Length: 286
Length: 167
Image (cartoon, rainbow over all chains, first blue to last red; front, top):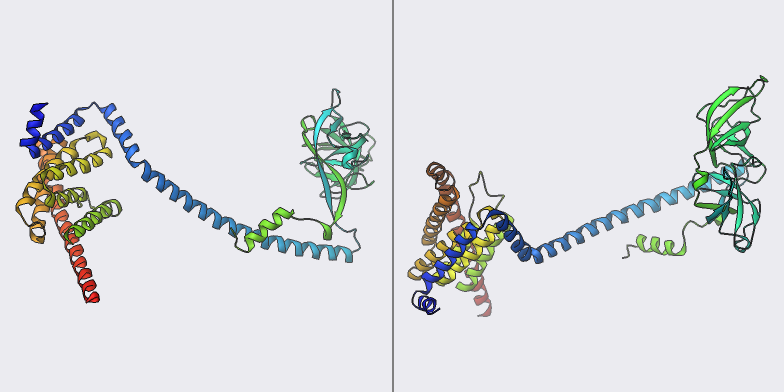
């Protein structure tokens, strides 16, 4: 130690340089893997504050860009919504002129499937809404893919829904393309048969079948299935039409009971919270 | 004023290195701003501070190229030490002197650096030193002197205008 003290006192400049040179050479002599690891560790430590600030600023920039983009989108959607509302009004006026029934919105009650009947082929499901939620028998039930059935029995907090894949639950339907009316009856699995279609009717493979609204149970226009096979019956006057449904009846988890219909002018597009947000965005708020 | 000018020049060198160094480098020939920082720092502050500054700047440079960790530390420590000694005997504010010091230091720095970098391969060393180091040294000297002159001139003008306003 006295040697170093002496060196530093008498040859401070040269000793400092020698120490620095020694450290530098030692760094050069470190084997490559630990040298890289050391450099990376020091660099991370030294640069961490700068990287943090840079990342923060980058994030800030991207959030601003995103916010600007979202504002633009909201403005565009508001404009589009306004136009659609006007189209809706115009459509309604034209329908009135043509003496059609007023177009309605459906008041849907979302329900969870809480049970199903223990049958080889499921024909009914139990939902978690009942009389307490104003559910009544014969109310139609929809899934995301289309019409699934109707409420058959109602309890206080649950209800049974008979699915269309039941022998005793035929549905009146329309060929979406040709507007031919028929009765859709379940045959097996997700396959159905379209009945009461004559040989002169225009039904083709690939046509979509939708609910006709006849009978007043199922609302009009909801998909039921796709025609997969069309051939003439033995009697020579009717067609045997087979269709298949996209709905996976055995794995339904959520369905919607159609409680009632709401006229156009009383339909609610946005909740109060949505309306406040839209107002804030349109006024350029935070 | 000299101290403030010196700090401003160092900051300008640093900003130039960070912001425009890549853009003003052509085929590997560009100003060596870290070396200019060491030279400018060491000149008025002596060999001890100069060599330590050289080591720190070189080490920081080496962190980005760990294959030669320690090489820049060594060469810039030597440069800082040498300039610290030279600065004690000269008037560092003279632009012509600065031009010469920047150029000679850059050449000497690259000489030592390339010897180790090329692992004492004489041909590679000589070719690189002639084709890259000499033009880079000239480039560095010119840019360094220009920055120093502009900063000092601007600072003088600012001080002069402030003095006039007060009087």
